[in-house]
Image (cartoon, rainbow, N blue to C red):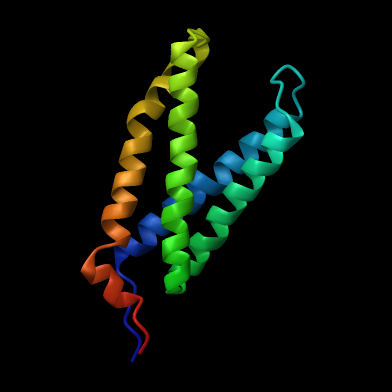
Length: 134
């Protein structure tokens, strides 16, 4: 008999897929169309692969694939670390537009929050039991 997925698993996997995968993917593609943004092809490709991978492993995690759970942890950590680094670099260079202050300074608390909540939840013993075969 298969174990049922707890509500926290549904909520966190869907939140990761949406807020770290689909939404940033759409924003990156839209911003690439704006020449004033100055996004390079390389940064577009990296972000599309990263965000697309997050969506894919979020779905895999919902299907109780143990490898997807660990890949989700790794990709979420990389994604939010990049956002945190980018925000710190913008703040240090004093290159934050007044319209972007909330976004840039918000990443200072969002990144540790999302990394922490993902590591805490996906590595719990109770959650690990769900991913055991049988």
